[in-house]
Image (tube, rainbow, N blue to C red):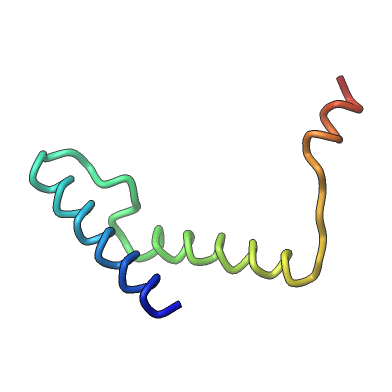
Length: 65
């Protein structure tokens, strides 16, 4: 798990550097509220996963259409 986190961090640093070099905006919010929003989405996802609530979206859509 530790090596996965290090590789994820390194790939993020590389991608951020690449975006800076080619002068395109990063595909992430550049301020703290935006970053906290992303963390909130992750925590909400993990919370629902922990509770065990699951909905098969394809099944629901096939029943509707």
